Length: 467
Ligand code: GLV
Ligand code: MN
Ligand code: MN
Image 1 (cartoon, helix red, strand yellow):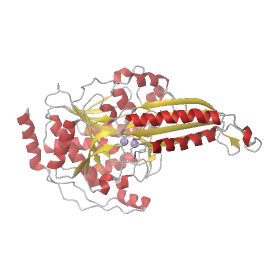
Image 2 (cartoon, protein in one colour; image 1 turned 90 degrees about the horizontal axis):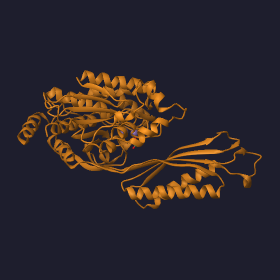
Image 3 (tube, protein in one colour; image 1 turned 180 degrees about the horizontal axis):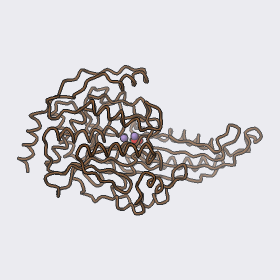
Image 4 (cartoon, protein in one colour; image 1 turned 90 degrees about the vertical axis):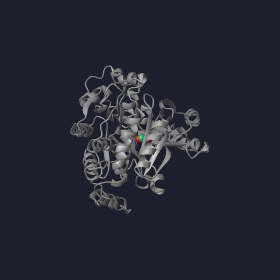
C-alpha cells in the first residue's frame, strides 16, 4: 500500500503550489464593504490555470452567491430554515451540482444528501467530507456552505487533476446542523451517528407553529420517516470524515494563517426553561402581588452569565439566545416566559457544573418569585470530540506540500463533525473569515481563502483515499 500512496502524492505534488483562478474584486466584497463599513483587502492572487489542483474560484463564488439567494431574509442576510421552501430549493441546487460533478446521489429519510465518486476499490470504506447549508435567522452565506460547495469543488479539482480515487469519495450535505426549527442541533448527523433517542424524540417533536417533524419532512419530499433507524450508519462506514468550514473566530485572520487544522470540538449543551406566573394588568396589579414570569426569566439570564464567568475559564461560554414572554403586550404582566440557553466548554465536566448551577438558580428563582418552573429540559448535553491523528497528519502534510501556513486549533463552534466522530475518524479544516464574524450578515470569507481551503481539502481527500 505504501508505495502507492507515495506515487499518488508525488504525482499531485508535481502539480501543486499554485493558487486560484480568479482574483477579481467582485460584487460580494463590495457589498460586504458597504454593509459593514470595513474595507476588505484582497491580496493579489497568482494565476493557476495550469495547475491540476486549481480551484475554479470564480465559479465557486458564483455558487455561494446563488445559494444565498434561497433565503427568507433580504441580502446580505441569509435565513434558510429546515424543510422550508428555500431549503428545498437549496437542496435541489446542491443535488444538481453533485450530479454535474458526476457523483451518484442518495438521500436518506431525513434528507441527508450523499454524492459518491466511486473509487477503484469500492468495497473499501469511503472517505467522506461535507457540511450543511441551513442557515439560522439573519446569518451569512458562508457558514456550512463553504464545506458543501467547497467539497463538490474539491471533487472537481481532483477530477480535473486526473486523480483516480481508490477508496470512494463521498460529499455529504447534512440536514439541519442548525437547531432553529426543532431546537435540535446537528439533527442529520446525530441520526447518522445512530441516536436512537433522537429517532424516538422526532416522533413527537413539533416546531413553533405546531407542525410535526414528520409533516415538515413530508413537505420537503421526505415521506418515509416513520422509522428513522434507516438513517443510522454503522461505525466504520467511512474510513475518514473531514469537514471544511469557516473558522467563525478571529484567530486565523489576526495571525495571517491560511489554514486551521482542528484537533478537537468543544462540548455543546442546550437547555429549555419555562416559567409560569399569574400575569395580570400592568397598571392595576400592585408590585407585591405579582408573580412576574418575565422577571424570573430575566433573573435566570443574568444567573447564566454569572455561572459561566464563575468557571474562571475563557473557554466556558453561555448564551440566552431565546427569551419569549407571553402574552407579549406592554400593559400585561408576563404570565409565561420561555428561555433557551446555549452553553459550551472544551471541558465537559466544567460545562456540566455550569448546567447544574443554572438548574439550581432556576429552582431558587421560581421559589423567590413565586412562579412555577414548569420546564427545565436539557435538550442536548454532548461530549467534546477529538480529531483523529492520522487525518490531522494528512491535512498538515497537504498544507506543507501546498506551501500553506497552518496552525492546530480547537473549534469552539459545533459542527456535524462532532457526531461524525462517533462513527468515523474525523478532522476539520478551518479557513479565515472576516474579523471572525459568523451567525450574522457580516460573515465573510475571501475567495482566495476559500480556494486555499478547497485545495487543502482536495489534497487531503486524495491522500486519505489511497491510504
Ligand atoms: C453552530 O452553528 C454552532 O452554533 O456552533
Ligand atoms: Mn452555524
Ligand atoms: Mn456551520
